Length: 432
Image: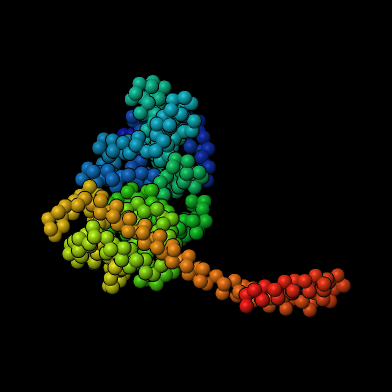
C-alpha cells in the first residue's frame, strides 16, 4: 500500500531538500539515513491518520455532520483546519508553545516525500500557532524526508515506534493508543507477538489495551452514535477492570457486571466503588436500589416502554446472545442513547433532564456498592476462622512430615520444640 504522493508538492520538497542526512533508527529499513529540509509550517500538512487524534476526529466528524471530513480531501483546507484545531486543543499545548518559544525546535519532524507530517504534528502546530501570533522565528520547521516509495504499513510502524513504543511523550490518550494497537493487530493477521514487539510492550499489556477498547466499542455502539469514544477517556480504569473481570466468567455474570460498569461509566461512578459489584447479582442489586427510589420508578417505567426492539437486537449482536442481558438491559439502552442535556418525557407529562437521571442512577449504584461491600465483609468474617484453621492444619501437616528428619541432627533443640507444642495446646484450649 503506497502513499499516493502529490506530484507538485513532491517536486517542491525535492527542491528544498538538503544534501546532508540524519540517521533515524526507528525507520524500519536498513538504510536509516534521511535527508533534511526546512519547510514553512503553513506548507506542511498534518497527518489526518495520526492515531493520537483518532477519537478527537470522531468528535469533529459529528460536529461537522460529515463522515468524510478527513477522507474526502485529507490535504484540503477543511480537513487540515479541523486537524489543526484538534492539535491546538490537546492537553499541554500552551506549555509546548512556551517551550518552543524559549528553546526552539529541538528535534526534527518527519514528513513524507510530499510533506505530510508523520512525526512532529504537535510541534509543527505549536510553531504555526506562534508564527500566526507574530513570532517570526517560528516560521519554519526542520524536517527529515522519507523516501517516495514509503508504504502505508511502514508509516504506521514508524509512528508506533517513534511516538508510542519509546516514551508516549506526546500523551496519547488510552483510547487512541488502544486504537493504534487494534490496527496493528488487524494488519499483523492477529499476531500478538508482532504487536507487542512493535509497541515494545508485553503481550499481556497490548492485549489488555485491546480488550478494554472492545468493551468501549460496545458501549459506543449501544449508544447509537450519541456517545463518542472521546467521552470515556477519563474512564480507563472502569473499562480495564471490566475487561479483566468478565474474561472467564459465565455469560450471565459477565452481562450483569457489564451493565453495571457501563452505567458506572455513563454516570461517572468511581471504579473503586464499582469493583464491589463484580458479582453475578450486581445488576439486580442496583435495580433493587432504584426500585426503592420513588424518583426512579417513573424512569424505569419509561425505559421499559421506550426501549425499542432494535436495541435488543443490537445488544444481542454485541455479545452473541438471544437472552436478556441483565435486569438493567432496558435502562442501559435507554440512557445510553440520550445526551446528558436532553429531556425525558414521563407518562404524566413531566420532563426530567437526563443529567439528573444519571445522577440518580449513580447514587443507586453507590448505595448498592456500599451494601455489597458490607456484605462481603460479613461473609469474610464468617469464613475467616475456617480459612485460617485450614491453613494452620496444612502447616501442622508439614511439621509432622519434617519432624523425623529434623530430629536426626545433633543440633536439634527438642526442648524448644516442646515449648512450641505447649503453645499450640494452649491455643487449642482457647479455641475449644
